Length: 482
Image (cartoon, rainbow, N blue to C red; front, top):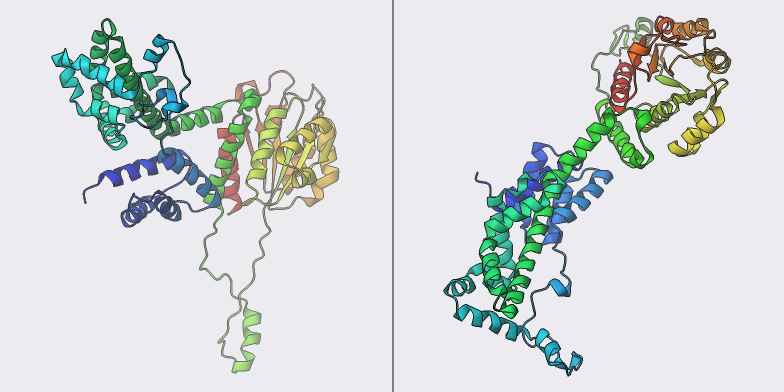
């Protein structure tokens, strides 16, 4: 089936939506094309609502959809009066104009008909300008023919390849390409000829050229929003996810929060659905025999042994001393962002003394809770005292389905870190994961006790950016379903 112009534009819109974090499958795309063919493109509101019913499948996606629709199919902004094509005669009441005795001022405020006459008079003296006056582009500009201008600009945009724009700094380059494809060079040459000997005709032609330039620039900026902004956002997100968490500046926190939320939604989608198991388990023979007494020993009804699985639980122990406080902040933000699929998380913070901060994260927004944690438990690091406090608080609550995550650099100021308590924690839990923000080559250097710590962990890994943190949480969620 041949793709119509409207369908092609709709496919570009779908691509634009994907760049704005709205997942759309090929089946959704086919449904959208079918819906648009039924609704048509004449009624903008009907098209918007019809496509929303097909493409937006959650409140988040609906909000992103409406925002993208207004950008992609937005109506052109009205121009200011100084940028408008001069109105036709009779559009203004001459009585509204302020009286003036200055003849030069009156000449500067000529009527539109007088300005048109000046350009026509100049055309009578130049064969090249006469041909220019007959061109469809100039006639459309003079008459304010929006439909003809829109068609001409779209055709020139395809010829100029404006969909290839990828950087905001390329606006000028692609605007020039679009103007050349429209034939604006002829207008420019005519303006150069008129500038020296016919000022009135020159100013009129310059006003028309400015109108054309503004329309071309708007078309290029719209192409940037459609084709480049999604790529740019993806590039910025990928770059930010690879940056060390300690180097994230305050002005990047808004983007960082959105990135964490996106990763959390992806992990929730991947691990949130549990597959049904058709295996019935082990036959409960005594219960089956008892149930068969009513049927003379014939086991019409079978009984199966119920297997009670303990729900997974995560205990996060975070060092919030100055060297690793930023990493603890993002770990806690990430863990609490995936609470839909990992609902049982207990949080502990320490520098020297250790305390449970779970209630703070349940009662306060995550960022406020993190700030309170850093203010309350920040200070010099003492792993021995922290492990002892944790043993007193929660060692008895660890069971075979518990995952313990410890975030710290294992630098204990050359004192005993009490690895015997760490070994006790490992013996009780399902997994003990140690996340160290320092590069692996620095483990064991100086006062680092990381090398002996490794032997008391199920997994010890470097974790200093959001991408590594996502992989670890992904593995944690996958293991919790087994």
